[in-house]
Amino acid sequence: MEGFAEYNTKLEQVFHLWRKDSNSKYSNHSNVTAAKVRELIDIATLRESGVFFTSENLAEKAINAFNTPIDDSALVVDPTCGSGSLLVAASRKLAIMPLASETLKKWGKQLCGIDLFPEFVYCTKLRLILETLVRGAEADKSLPELLNLLTNIHVGNCLDQLPLITKATHLALNPPYNNSKTPASYSWANGKINNAAIYYYELSLILKDGCSVSAILPDVLRSGSRFEAWRRTVEPALAMSNVAVEGRFDKQTDIDIFILNGLVDRQSFNTVEWQTVETLGTEGAHKIRDFFEVAVGAVVPYRDPHEGKLYSYIHPKTLPRWGEISKIPESRRFLGRVFQPPFVAIRRTSGPRDRHRAVPTLVLGKRLVAVENHLIVLTPRNGSLEKCRELSDLLKENHVNEFLNNRIRCRHLTVSAISEIPWRFE
Ligand SMILES: C[S@@+](CC[C@H](N)C(=O)[O-])C[C@H]1O[C@@H](n2cnc3c(N)ncnc32)[C@H](O)[C@@H]1O
Image 1 (cartoon, rainbow, N blue to C red):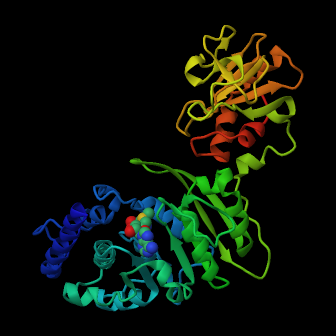
Image 2: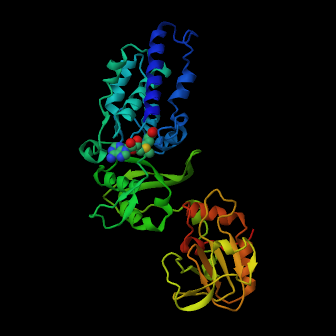
Image 3: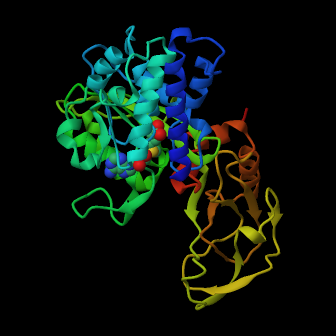
């Protein structure tokens, strides 16, 4: 948090310099130009504090995604506002007046932000104040006086502030993405779960009908099979929804995200198209599952005892990528499911930035094979080696990567994602 306090000090200094120069605002005296302040306001330049700050670009996309315009009567709430990028982007939809004080008086009523950390709340306020100046308002009051006008931006736990959040006409949300224990009352999850799922769920329960929602969420909520129940739980109350797959959160943060927007509507039973257009475009076409039985390898090395019959044994390290293997160097005893070659083994671990998401090895031979569970096994329904080779060729096609990246951005490929790959050669 130390780096963060320094950043706040910089913002304060900029304000003071700007105010001092306010009679000759665009002079070179202090070198505080609008462009430089904008650069400073762009939080992407500040990473040391370890919190995921929303970049200016992503914040703008999220705010532009609202289904209804942010007009004079809007109340935009960001319940986990951090350094305030979403509120800064929202403020750009609001009018600017000649004086910073009158502008902030209005913004103070229309922009509401909450965060656990005072440094972040302070930063949000400073950025909004500087935003009025770079948009041409006069710094007519002292910093403490201007800070006092942003009364709806404060420290707190948003989950204790539900009566305030209920009043939102627009909810902008970029919640924390770490895991915590699932509350016992939830029917849709158990064990540890991503906080983004919890925060979205809790907030969606209390928003009023007609509220516009725009949420930046980790992609696993959209594409992960663990979140199927979450998706089914939250989607009925969101009308006119849209899902935009955005890729990586930012250059430094290797988390894929998407923006979910829509209008709260508890009167009807709505559905969300969690898959994007690219995925839906494959309806009706043949899929891998039409030609292959798809299953996950059954051996969990640290858990399964070395008991039962002796089998050839494969795991990702023993397999040549894109190659064929008939002499399997390792064997082990195993009591669970084993597989009859020929089959194709695909590594489960891959990421959206890999050249190929699904990397195969063709496994040949007569002996049954025990397969480690970081591999997905595709056994041709017609038992043919030729079909396995066709599959290896298919996995080189660009559309397969596109399909998988849209379908599942988290690291582990799933049986259902692989099964649904379109059987199409370009
Ligand atoms: C992903 S960051 C938000 C980034 C923010 N949009 C920005 O522009 O910097 C999540 C934020 O949620 C805050 N947070 C976590 N739990 C919270 C809670 N229960 N109530 C309020 N804020 C919370 C964290 O302090 C962090 O600043």
